[in-house]
Amino acid sequence: MAAGPGTPLGILAGGGGVPIELAANAVARGRRVHILAIVGEARQAEIAAFPHTWVRWGAIGHILRTLRDQGCRELVIVGSVRRPDLGKLRPDLGFVLSLPVLVRLLFGGDDSVLTRVVRFFEGKGFVVRGVHEIAPDLLVAAGPRGTHRPRTGDLADMRKGFGVVGALGTLDVGQAAVVAHGRVVAIEGAEGTDRMLERARLVLEQTQGQDPRPEASGVLVKRPKPGQELRVDMPAIGPRTVALAGAAGLAGIAVEAGKVLMAERDTTVAAAEDLGLFVSGVAHEGADAAEPCAARDEPRALVDLSVLTRRRLGKGAMRDVRMGLETVRRLQPFGTGRAAVVMREYVVAVEAAEGTRALLERCTTLRQWGRMAAGRRLGVLVVASDRGGGIGPPQSADEVVDMARQVGLAGVVWTPAAADLAPAAIERARAAGMFLAIASAAAPCATTRGAGGSGPDTC
Image (cartoon, rainbow, N blue to C red; front, top):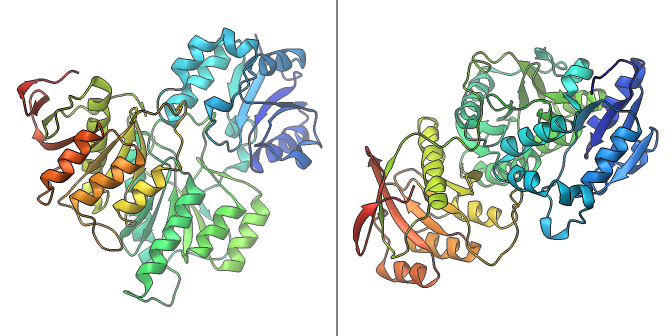
Protein backbone atom coordinates (compact mmCIF):
# COMPACT_ATOMS: atom_id res chain seq x y z
CA MET A 1 0.00 0.00 0.00
CA ALA A 2 2.10 2.89 -1.26
CA ALA A 3 1.70 6.34 0.32
CA GLY A 4 1.51 9.40 -1.87
CA PRO A 5 1.67 13.13 -1.16
CA GLY A 6 -1.98 13.58 -2.15
CA THR A 7 -3.36 10.96 0.22
CA PRO A 8 -4.75 12.10 3.57
CA LEU A 9 -2.67 11.54 6.68
CA GLY A 10 -4.35 9.33 9.26
CA ILE A 11 -3.85 10.47 12.86
CA LEU A 12 -4.76 8.05 15.65
CA ALA A 13 -5.15 10.60 18.43
CA GLY A 14 -4.87 10.17 22.17
CA GLY A 15 -4.95 12.94 24.74
CA GLY A 16 -3.03 16.20 24.99
CA GLY A 17 -2.41 18.98 22.53
CA VAL A 18 0.15 17.34 20.25
CA PRO A 19 -2.41 15.55 18.00
CA ILE A 20 -4.13 18.88 17.33
CA GLU A 21 -0.86 20.66 16.64
CA LEU A 22 0.25 17.88 14.33
CA ALA A 23 -3.00 18.09 12.36
CA ALA A 24 -2.76 21.88 12.09
CA ASN A 25 0.88 21.66 11.04
CA ALA A 26 0.12 19.08 8.34
CA VAL A 27 -2.80 21.13 7.00
CA ALA A 28 -0.63 24.25 6.91
CA ARG A 29 1.83 22.29 4.75
CA GLY A 30 -0.95 21.42 2.33
CA ARG A 31 -1.65 17.90 3.61
CA ARG A 32 -5.17 16.60 4.16
CA VAL A 33 -5.76 14.78 7.45
CA HIS A 34 -8.32 12.49 9.01
CA ILE A 35 -8.22 12.06 12.78
CA LEU A 36 -9.28 8.85 14.47
CA ALA A 37 -9.96 10.19 17.95
CA ILE A 38 -9.91 7.71 20.84
CA VAL A 39 -13.01 8.09 23.01
CA GLY A 40 -12.12 9.19 26.53
CA GLU A 41 -8.63 10.31 25.52
CA ALA A 42 -8.71 12.88 22.69
CA ARG A 43 -9.84 16.49 23.19
CA GLN A 44 -13.36 16.61 21.84
CA ALA A 45 -13.75 20.36 21.21
CA GLU A 46 -10.46 20.76 19.34
CA ILE A 47 -10.83 17.57 17.32
CA ALA A 48 -14.05 18.97 15.86
CA ALA A 49 -12.07 21.47 13.75
CA PHE A 50 -10.73 18.63 11.57
CA PRO A 51 -12.24 15.73 9.63
CA HIS A 52 -12.49 13.01 12.24
CA THR A 53 -14.02 9.75 13.41
CA TRP A 54 -14.41 8.70 17.03
CA VAL A 55 -13.12 5.21 17.83
CA ARG A 56 -13.09 3.12 20.99
CA TRP A 57 -10.48 0.88 22.54
CA GLY A 58 -11.00 -2.57 21.10
CA ALA A 59 -12.62 -1.40 17.86
CA ILE A 60 -9.72 -2.59 15.71
CA GLY A 61 -11.93 -3.39 12.75
CA HIS A 62 -13.52 0.07 12.88
CA ILE A 63 -10.09 1.73 12.95
CA LEU A 64 -8.75 -0.23 9.98
CA ARG A 65 -11.95 0.20 7.97
CA THR A 66 -12.02 3.97 8.59
CA LEU A 67 -8.39 4.40 7.51
CA ARG A 68 -9.07 2.52 4.29
CA ASP A 69 -12.38 4.25 3.59
CA GLN A 70 -10.73 7.66 4.00
CA GLY A 71 -7.89 6.70 1.67
CA CYS A 72 -5.21 6.99 4.36
CA ARG A 73 -1.94 5.25 3.55
CA GLU A 74 0.24 6.88 6.19
CA LEU A 75 -0.60 6.84 9.89
CA VAL A 76 0.72 8.79 12.88
CA ILE A 77 -0.08 7.43 16.36
CA VAL A 78 0.22 10.31 18.82
CA GLY A 79 -1.06 11.58 22.15
CA SER A 80 -1.22 10.34 25.71
CA VAL A 81 -3.27 7.26 26.59
CA ARG A 82 -4.13 5.51 29.80
CA ARG A 83 -3.49 1.79 29.97
CA PRO A 84 -6.81 0.17 29.06
CA ASP A 85 -8.67 -2.15 31.39
CA LEU A 86 -9.15 -5.20 29.19
CA GLY A 87 -12.17 -6.23 31.21
CA LYS A 88 -14.04 -3.13 30.00
CA LEU A 89 -13.17 -3.33 26.31
CA ARG A 90 -15.93 -3.64 23.73
CA PRO A 91 -14.17 -5.56 20.96
CA ASP A 92 -15.49 -5.64 17.41
CA LEU A 93 -15.06 -8.35 14.80
CA GLY A 94 -11.71 -6.92 13.70
CA PHE A 95 -10.46 -7.26 17.28
CA VAL A 96 -11.61 -10.87 17.47
CA LEU A 97 -10.00 -11.75 14.14
CA SER A 98 -6.74 -10.14 15.27
CA LEU A 99 -6.89 -11.63 18.78
CA PRO A 100 -3.86 -13.97 18.54
CA VAL A 101 -1.67 -11.06 17.42
CA LEU A 102 -3.14 -8.67 20.01
CA VAL A 103 -2.59 -11.09 22.89
CA ARG A 104 1.11 -11.34 22.02
CA LEU A 105 1.23 -7.57 21.58
CA LEU A 106 0.03 -6.80 25.10
CA PHE A 107 2.83 -8.54 26.99
CA GLY A 108 5.78 -6.45 28.10
CA GLY A 109 6.51 -2.83 28.88
CA ASP A 110 5.63 0.33 27.00
CA ASP A 111 8.38 0.09 24.41
CA SER A 112 7.70 -3.57 23.72
CA VAL A 113 3.96 -2.97 23.30
CA LEU A 114 4.31 0.12 21.14
CA THR A 115 6.89 -1.46 18.86
CA ARG A 116 4.41 -4.25 18.24
CA VAL A 117 1.66 -1.71 17.58
CA VAL A 118 3.81 -0.34 14.74
CA ARG A 119 4.34 -3.84 13.36
CA PHE A 120 0.62 -4.56 13.60
CA PHE A 121 -0.36 -1.58 11.44
CA GLU A 122 2.52 -2.19 9.07
CA GLY A 123 1.27 -5.74 8.69
CA LYS A 124 -2.08 -4.30 7.62
CA GLY A 125 -0.39 -2.33 4.85
CA PHE A 126 -0.01 1.11 6.43
CA VAL A 127 3.14 3.22 6.68
CA VAL A 128 3.59 4.38 10.28
CA ARG A 129 5.22 7.79 10.59
CA GLY A 130 6.50 9.67 13.60
CA VAL A 131 5.52 13.21 14.54
CA HIS A 132 9.13 14.23 13.96
CA GLU A 133 8.86 13.06 10.35
CA ILE A 134 5.69 15.04 9.61
CA ALA A 135 6.23 18.15 11.77
CA PRO A 136 9.90 18.42 12.83
CA ASP A 137 9.40 21.98 14.06
CA LEU A 138 7.42 20.60 17.03
CA LEU A 139 10.66 19.19 18.49
CA VAL A 140 12.75 20.98 21.13
CA ALA A 141 15.95 22.23 19.49
CA ALA A 142 19.32 22.56 21.22
CA GLY A 143 19.70 25.52 23.54
CA PRO A 144 17.44 27.44 25.94
CA ARG A 145 13.78 28.16 25.23
CA GLY A 146 13.43 31.54 26.91
CA THR A 147 15.60 33.84 28.98
CA HIS A 148 16.37 31.64 31.98
CA ARG A 149 19.57 29.58 32.07
CA PRO A 150 20.74 26.64 34.19
CA ARG A 151 23.33 27.33 36.89
CA THR A 152 26.43 25.26 37.57
CA GLY A 153 24.62 23.04 40.07
CA ASP A 154 21.75 22.56 37.66
CA LEU A 155 24.16 21.36 34.97
CA ALA A 156 25.50 18.70 37.34
CA ASP A 157 21.94 17.59 38.16
CA MET A 158 21.16 17.43 34.43
CA ARG A 159 24.14 15.17 33.77
CA LYS A 160 23.14 12.84 36.56
CA GLY A 161 19.53 12.74 35.41
CA PHE A 162 20.49 11.90 31.84
CA GLY A 163 22.74 9.16 33.21
CA VAL A 164 19.95 7.62 35.30
CA VAL A 165 17.47 7.51 32.43
CA GLY A 166 20.11 6.17 30.07
CA ALA A 167 21.21 3.46 32.51
CA LEU A 168 17.66 2.15 32.83
CA GLY A 169 16.68 2.64 29.21
CA THR A 170 17.36 -0.86 27.92
CA LEU A 171 15.17 -2.23 30.72
CA ASP A 172 12.22 -0.21 29.33
CA VAL A 173 11.82 1.92 32.45
CA GLY A 174 10.62 5.53 32.23
CA GLN A 175 11.82 8.47 30.20
CA ALA A 176 12.31 10.97 33.02
CA ALA A 177 13.91 11.61 36.40
CA VAL A 178 14.16 14.47 38.90
CA VAL A 179 17.53 15.29 40.46
CA ALA A 180 18.10 18.01 43.06
CA HIS A 181 21.51 18.93 44.50
CA GLY A 182 22.96 15.66 43.27
CA ARG A 183 20.24 13.50 44.80
CA VAL A 184 17.89 11.46 42.63
CA VAL A 185 14.48 12.49 43.93
CA ALA A 186 12.18 10.55 41.60
CA ILE A 187 12.37 8.11 38.68
CA GLU A 188 9.51 7.73 36.23
CA GLY A 189 7.85 4.34 35.99
CA ALA A 190 4.48 3.25 34.67
CA GLU A 191 2.78 6.23 36.33
CA GLY A 192 4.08 8.78 33.80
CA THR A 193 5.87 12.11 34.10
CA ASP A 194 3.02 14.10 35.66
CA ARG A 195 2.56 11.78 38.62
CA MET A 196 6.32 11.48 39.04
CA LEU A 197 6.53 15.28 39.35
CA GLU A 198 3.76 15.28 41.94
CA ARG A 199 5.72 12.68 43.91
CA ALA A 200 8.90 14.74 43.59
CA ARG A 201 7.05 17.75 45.02
CA LEU A 202 6.01 15.76 48.10
CA VAL A 203 9.54 14.46 48.65
CA LEU A 204 11.12 17.90 48.28
CA GLU A 205 8.53 19.49 50.58
CA GLN A 206 9.27 16.93 53.28
CA THR A 207 13.03 17.34 52.98
CA GLN A 208 13.02 21.14 52.78
CA GLY A 209 12.95 21.52 56.55
CA GLN A 210 16.06 19.35 56.83
CA ASP A 211 17.95 21.36 54.21
CA PRO A 212 16.22 24.69 53.60
CA ARG A 213 17.22 26.46 50.38
CA PRO A 214 15.48 29.71 49.44
CA GLU A 215 16.11 29.38 45.71
CA ALA A 216 14.46 26.97 43.31
CA SER A 217 16.55 23.84 42.85
CA GLY A 218 16.38 20.57 41.01
CA VAL A 219 15.93 19.59 37.39
CA LEU A 220 13.44 17.46 35.50
CA VAL A 221 15.34 15.51 32.84
CA LYS A 222 13.50 13.85 29.99
CA ARG A 223 14.90 11.88 27.06
CA PRO A 224 14.03 8.80 25.03
CA LYS A 225 15.14 5.42 26.17
CA PRO A 226 18.02 4.08 24.07
CA GLY A 227 16.59 2.55 20.92
CA GLN A 228 13.05 3.68 21.74
CA GLU A 229 10.43 3.48 18.98
CA LEU A 230 10.08 7.23 18.41
CA ARG A 231 7.36 6.86 15.79
CA VAL A 232 4.79 6.10 18.46
CA ASP A 233 6.41 6.99 21.77
CA MET A 234 8.35 10.23 21.47
CA PRO A 235 8.67 11.97 24.87
CA ALA A 236 6.84 15.28 25.23
CA ILE A 237 6.60 18.25 27.56
CA GLY A 238 3.96 20.96 27.68
CA PRO A 239 2.24 23.56 29.88
CA ARG A 240 1.24 20.99 32.51
CA THR A 241 4.82 19.72 32.73
CA VAL A 242 6.00 23.27 33.41
CA ALA A 243 3.25 23.88 35.98
CA LEU A 244 4.07 20.69 37.89
CA ALA A 245 7.82 21.38 37.75
CA GLY A 246 7.17 24.86 39.14
CA ALA A 247 4.92 23.47 41.89
CA ALA A 248 7.72 21.09 42.87
CA GLY A 249 10.10 24.04 43.25
CA LEU A 250 12.40 22.91 40.46
CA ALA A 251 14.84 25.24 38.75
CA GLY A 252 14.16 23.93 35.26
CA ILE A 253 13.60 21.27 32.65
CA ALA A 254 16.25 19.68 30.43
CA VAL A 255 15.37 17.46 27.48
CA GLU A 256 17.37 15.74 24.79
CA ALA A 257 17.47 18.08 21.80
CA GLY A 258 15.70 16.84 18.70
CA LYS A 259 14.19 13.87 20.55
CA VAL A 260 11.42 15.48 22.65
CA LEU A 261 8.22 17.22 21.55
CA MET A 262 7.03 20.51 23.03
CA ALA A 263 3.24 20.78 23.04
CA GLU A 264 1.72 24.26 22.85
CA ARG A 265 5.15 25.80 22.46
CA ASP A 266 4.24 29.46 23.03
CA THR A 267 2.13 28.70 26.10
CA THR A 268 4.78 26.36 27.51
CA VAL A 269 7.64 28.85 27.10
CA ALA A 270 5.54 31.70 28.52
CA ALA A 271 4.59 29.62 31.56
CA ALA A 272 8.25 28.77 32.19
CA GLU A 273 9.18 32.45 31.92
CA ASP A 274 6.52 33.41 34.45
CA LEU A 275 7.68 30.75 36.90
CA GLY A 276 11.38 31.50 36.42
CA LEU A 277 12.15 28.02 35.08
CA PHE A 278 14.71 27.32 32.39
CA VAL A 279 13.77 24.94 29.57
CA SER A 280 16.79 23.65 27.66
CA GLY A 281 17.39 21.28 24.79
CA VAL A 282 20.61 19.37 25.42
CA ALA A 283 22.60 17.52 22.78
CA HIS A 284 23.15 14.39 24.85
CA GLU A 285 26.30 12.65 23.70
CA GLY A 286 26.22 8.91 23.40
CA ALA A 287 22.43 8.53 23.40
CA ASP A 288 22.30 7.15 19.87
CA ALA A 289 25.26 4.85 20.49
CA ALA A 290 23.47 2.91 23.22
CA GLU A 291 22.19 -0.59 22.57
CA PRO A 292 18.63 -0.78 21.25
CA CYS A 293 15.92 -1.12 23.86
CA ALA A 294 14.35 -4.56 24.03
CA ALA A 295 11.98 -4.88 26.93
CA ARG A 296 11.92 -8.67 26.79
CA ASP A 297 15.70 -9.08 26.58
CA GLU A 298 16.60 -10.71 29.87
CA PRO A 299 19.42 -9.30 31.99
CA ARG A 300 22.43 -11.44 31.27
CA ALA A 301 23.65 -11.85 34.86
CA LEU A 302 22.56 -15.06 36.55
CA VAL A 303 21.94 -15.13 40.26
CA ASP A 304 22.20 -17.53 43.15
CA LEU A 305 18.79 -17.44 44.83
CA SER A 306 18.03 -18.90 48.26
CA VAL A 307 14.26 -19.35 48.66
CA LEU A 308 13.03 -19.02 52.25
CA THR A 309 9.51 -20.28 51.61
CA ARG A 310 8.51 -23.63 50.16
CA ARG A 311 7.08 -22.16 47.01
CA ARG A 312 9.20 -22.76 43.92
CA LEU A 313 9.75 -19.99 41.39
CA GLY A 314 8.54 -20.49 37.84
CA LYS A 315 10.20 -19.15 34.72
CA GLY A 316 8.22 -15.91 34.71
CA ALA A 317 8.99 -15.14 38.34
CA MET A 318 12.69 -15.80 37.79
CA ARG A 319 12.74 -13.43 34.83
CA ASP A 320 11.07 -10.76 36.97
CA VAL A 321 13.62 -11.34 39.74
CA ARG A 322 16.54 -10.98 37.34
CA MET A 323 15.10 -7.79 35.87
CA GLY A 324 14.54 -6.30 39.33
CA LEU A 325 18.07 -7.18 40.42
CA GLU A 326 19.47 -5.66 37.24
CA THR A 327 17.47 -2.48 37.85
CA VAL A 328 18.81 -1.88 41.35
CA ARG A 329 22.31 -2.87 40.22
CA ARG A 330 22.37 -0.27 37.46
CA LEU A 331 21.24 2.46 39.85
CA GLN A 332 23.87 1.72 42.50
CA PRO A 333 26.48 4.13 40.99
CA PHE A 334 23.90 6.93 41.23
CA GLY A 335 23.23 6.32 44.93
CA THR A 336 19.56 5.49 44.40
CA GLY A 337 17.22 2.67 43.46
CA ARG A 338 16.79 0.85 46.75
CA ALA A 339 13.84 -1.13 45.43
CA ALA A 340 11.98 -1.97 42.23
CA VAL A 341 8.73 -3.70 41.38
CA VAL A 342 8.62 -5.88 38.26
CA MET A 343 5.51 -7.47 36.75
CA ARG A 344 5.70 -9.82 33.78
CA GLU A 345 9.16 -8.61 32.76
CA TYR A 346 8.13 -4.95 33.04
CA VAL A 347 9.65 -2.59 35.62
CA VAL A 348 6.51 -0.93 36.97
CA ALA A 349 8.09 1.29 39.63
CA VAL A 350 11.50 2.21 41.03
CA GLU A 351 12.18 3.67 44.46
CA ALA A 352 14.28 6.82 44.53
CA ALA A 353 13.77 9.04 47.58
CA GLU A 354 10.12 8.35 48.43
CA GLY A 355 10.64 5.20 50.51
CA THR A 356 9.51 1.61 50.04
CA ARG A 357 6.06 2.17 51.54
CA ALA A 358 5.26 4.90 49.02
CA LEU A 359 6.66 2.72 46.23
CA LEU A 360 4.30 -0.13 47.08
CA GLU A 361 1.32 2.17 47.60
CA ARG A 362 1.95 3.56 44.12
CA CYS A 363 1.84 0.08 42.63
CA THR A 364 -1.78 -0.39 43.73
CA THR A 365 -2.88 2.26 41.21
CA LEU A 366 -0.73 1.22 38.26
CA ARG A 367 -2.03 -0.93 35.42
CA GLN A 368 0.30 -2.81 33.13
CA TRP A 369 -0.68 -3.27 29.49
CA GLY A 370 -2.85 -6.35 29.19
CA ARG A 371 -3.16 -7.04 32.91
CA MET A 372 -6.51 -8.37 34.05
CA ALA A 373 -7.50 -8.89 37.68
CA ALA A 374 -7.63 -12.64 38.09
CA GLY A 375 -7.30 -12.94 41.85
CA ARG A 376 -3.77 -14.28 41.69
CA ARG A 377 -0.56 -12.74 42.92
CA LEU A 378 1.60 -11.03 40.35
CA GLY A 379 4.93 -9.23 40.44
CA VAL A 380 8.13 -9.15 42.45
CA LEU A 381 9.61 -6.57 44.81
CA VAL A 382 13.42 -6.54 44.78
CA VAL A 383 15.09 -4.68 47.66
CA ALA A 384 18.76 -3.68 47.84
CA SER A 385 18.88 -3.96 51.61
CA ASP A 386 22.36 -2.44 51.92
CA ARG A 387 21.25 0.82 50.29
CA GLY A 388 19.87 3.86 52.08
CA GLY A 389 16.11 4.37 52.13
CA GLY A 390 13.99 7.40 51.39
CA ILE A 391 12.11 9.93 53.47
CA GLY A 392 10.31 8.88 56.63
CA PRO A 393 11.17 6.04 59.00
CA PRO A 394 12.73 2.96 57.37
CA GLN A 395 10.52 -0.10 56.99
CA SER A 396 11.63 -3.35 58.55
CA ALA A 397 11.79 -6.50 56.46
CA ASP A 398 8.67 -7.76 58.24
CA GLU A 399 6.79 -4.57 57.32
CA VAL A 400 7.94 -4.87 53.71
CA VAL A 401 6.61 -8.44 53.54
CA ASP A 402 3.23 -7.39 54.93
CA MET A 403 2.97 -4.43 52.54
CA ALA A 404 3.89 -6.60 49.55
CA ARG A 405 1.31 -9.16 50.64
CA GLN A 406 -1.40 -6.49 50.87
CA VAL A 407 -0.50 -5.08 47.44
CA GLY A 408 -0.87 -8.55 45.90
CA LEU A 409 2.73 -9.20 44.88
CA ALA A 410 3.91 -12.76 44.34
CA GLY A 411 7.18 -12.37 46.21
CA VAL A 412 10.00 -10.32 47.71
CA VAL A 413 13.73 -10.72 47.09
CA TRP A 414 16.46 -9.06 49.15
CA THR A 415 20.04 -8.53 48.06
CA PRO A 416 21.93 -9.09 50.31
CA ALA A 417 20.00 -10.79 53.11
CA ALA A 418 17.70 -8.71 55.32
CA ALA A 419 19.01 -9.10 58.86
CA ASP A 420 15.67 -8.26 60.51
CA LEU A 421 13.42 -10.77 58.73
CA ALA A 422 11.57 -12.73 61.41
CA PRO A 423 10.35 -16.34 61.06
CA ALA A 424 6.78 -15.15 61.67
CA ALA A 425 6.92 -12.96 58.56
CA ILE A 426 8.15 -15.93 56.52
CA GLU A 427 5.22 -17.99 57.77
CA ARG A 428 2.73 -15.22 56.89
CA ALA A 429 4.17 -15.03 53.40
CA ARG A 430 4.02 -18.80 53.00
CA ALA A 431 0.40 -18.85 54.14
CA ALA A 432 -0.43 -16.13 51.61
CA GLY A 433 1.15 -18.09 48.75
CA MET A 434 4.12 -15.73 48.39
CA PHE A 435 7.79 -16.52 47.98
CA LEU A 436 10.61 -14.81 49.88
CA ALA A 437 14.20 -15.17 48.74
CA ILE A 438 17.74 -13.90 49.18
CA ALA A 439 19.86 -13.12 46.12
CA SER A 440 23.62 -13.34 46.43
CA ALA A 441 26.41 -12.64 43.94
CA ALA A 442 26.20 -13.64 40.30
CA ALA A 443 26.86 -17.32 39.72
CA PRO A 444 27.73 -19.39 36.62
CA CYS A 445 24.23 -20.91 36.70
CA ALA A 446 21.17 -19.64 38.52
CA THR A 447 19.90 -21.99 41.19
CA THR A 448 17.16 -21.98 43.78
CA ARG A 449 17.51 -23.51 47.20
CA GLY A 450 14.52 -24.16 49.38
CA ALA A 451 13.70 -25.96 52.58
CA GLY A 452 13.56 -29.29 50.77
CA GLY A 453 17.04 -29.15 49.28
CA SER A 454 18.47 -27.63 46.13
CA GLY A 455 17.98 -28.01 42.44
CA PRO A 456 18.29 -26.21 39.16
CA ASP A 457 16.17 -23.16 38.48
CA THR A 458 13.19 -23.70 36.22
CA CYS A 459 14.44 -21.26 33.58
